[in-house]
Amino acid sequence: MINISPRQLEVFVHVATRGSVRAAAGQLHLTQPAASMALRDMEHQLGAPLFDRERGRLHLNARGRELLPLAQELLERYAEFGRRGKDDATLGGELRIGTSNTVGNYRVGELLGGFVEAHPQVTVRLRVANTETIAAAMLDHGLDVGCVEGPVTHPQLEVRPWRVDSLVVCARPDHPLARRRRLAAEHFAGARWVLREPGSATRVLSERALGQLPGGETVLELDQIEAIKQAVVAGLGIACLPAVAISDAVAAGRLKVLRTPFLDLERRLSLLVHRQRYRSAVLEAFLRTL
Image 1 (cartoon, rainbow, N blue to C red):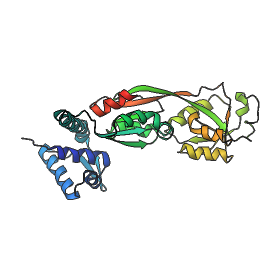
Image 2 (tube, rainbow, N blue to C red):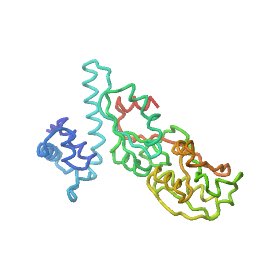
Image 3 (spheres, rainbow, N blue to C red):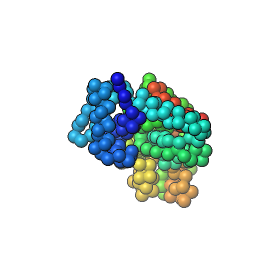
Image 4 (cartoon, one colour):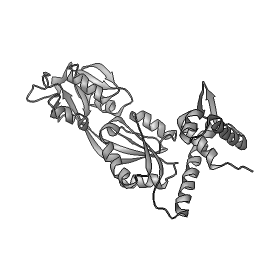
């Protein structure tokens, strides 16, 4: 008879999401040998390994990937059982949220403010990366919910609209394009662009905009919006960035927004939820706040 304990499930889930027994042990306040023993006993009861061991890192194998969402659900239901048994309406636990750069750096208050205020006992862990990385983490069950700025199409991910976000083309105030009273597409011929890295949603929309303009030159590719802002302020080129990200620099007179009504620079910010993910009380409460 299989007799897997909640502690063993916790060790399995934490090893799966953190990649090592050592990291899982630290998170669960266990010694590393105790965490290793719990995982080893669980695999012994199941009669099969759940991880591939590669150079000191543990990677879920096919069996592990199949069992991970079920293990997460069992732990969440166990916690809910305890709350209901105590007639305690206070939500607790952890919520792992992944956001793309624009959301994580400039809209985190909109995303989390209402939920954190309403449920202070919930620990929120935020991961910020590009859209491609967040979508991959959602598929690996490394996150409970995502909020991204790029298009995501995968049958296992439910995509929910959240906000409309606008990008703008910006330049240093003394840039030749910034000094023109009225701009047309042909004025961008030969422009020097500073772009986000491939895989980011801002890069996708920037490339779509560049496709509507005469040929230019990409002089830099950077993975942080703030780094791109500083490059533009330094006069290294022009950029296509979220309006919310440059409002401070525009107000300070360090950047100028170029009027480009001939470009489509709107996009939709979306929430990602794994279709196989158990909708715990914590996750449902977060989705309701949005």
